[in-house]
Image (cartoon, rainbow, N blue to C red; front, side, top):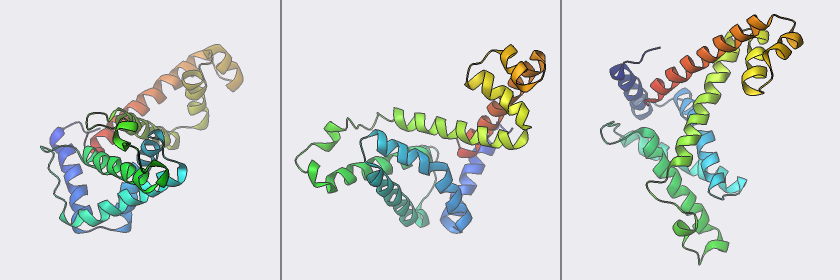
Length: 197
């Protein structure tokens, strides 16, 4: 894992430069894969229907597509994730404004939206990192190794019960749990660096 802030900055900067100068299906797919779940979850938590949340996602991505040729990534002005949050927040407000049922409602007040209130957004980002890290680790370890972790750490089963269920020693279950935890933490840190966090 590379925890050098300069390298992280360059990774983020180089990705943003690719998005601006040489956008490809692959770079857009990467951006979409990183943030689509966050955008949808944020919209749903703010009261959007599934259909509205999908519209918010599409409109957010369209806004990015339109602005990326002129976008200048400057980490001193803030994180890309924060910029994306502002776009998404505004698209949620727009979605409610378009919905006639909310025509006479102060949407920002009703939705309790504020510039400082990005807790849900940050939580969604953390969940996205964890989901991606787990998915990456599953591909790197044997099924029984991951099952030992899942059953003990996620489901909270006793080590001795998992050992019996998987047909391995309790010591090996504990080793598997620890090694998968370490791999997930390492992968999550790598992803955070890749995302420029």
